[in-house]
Image 1: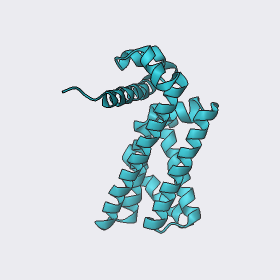
Image 2: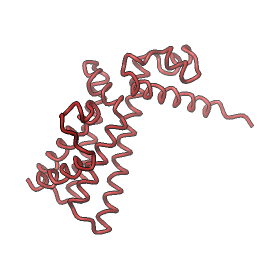
Image 3: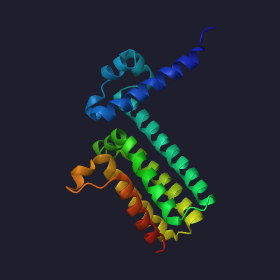
Length: 202
C-alpha cells in the first residue's frame, strides 16, 4: 500500500529539519548549506527550496522545531517534578532535579542554542522568534514555580534568570572552559537547587 503523498511530504520535511539541527550540533551555522542538508536528508536542492523557500526559511523551521522540543522537554521535567513532590521529596531535591533537567535540556540542544541565541542574534526574524520563545518559556517556568513551590513573583523571575543563565552557559561552554576546577553535573545541580530555593523566597 502506498504512503499518501501528504504523509511522505511531511516525513521528508521533518527529515530535512532534523538534519539541519544535526548539522548545527556538529558544525554551527556555517555547516548548514542547502547542498549539505539535501545530501544528508537524501533529498534534492530543489525539494528544499520548494518546501522552505531558501536557507533562511529552512533555518527558521529548524529554530521553531528546536524551541518546540525545548518546551516539550521543560513540560516533561515539570511533570516529573510534580511526581517528586507527590512522593514527598524535599523542596531541595525537587529544585535540584529541575536544575539538572534544565542543564540537560540546554546541553542536548547545544547546537541550536548557539546558532539561534548567539550566532544569528543580529537577524531580525531569528531574534523575534527567540524573544517570543523565551518570553513564553519564562511564563511557563515562573508560573510553575509560583504554583508548586510557593515562589513570589520576584523570586520566580529571579529563579528563571538563574536557570536560563546557567543553562545557556552549559550550551555554550564545556565545564573545563568555565573553570580549571571541574564540577560534576550532579554537584552543580544540587548547589543550583539550593540557590533557586533561596531566590524563590525573595
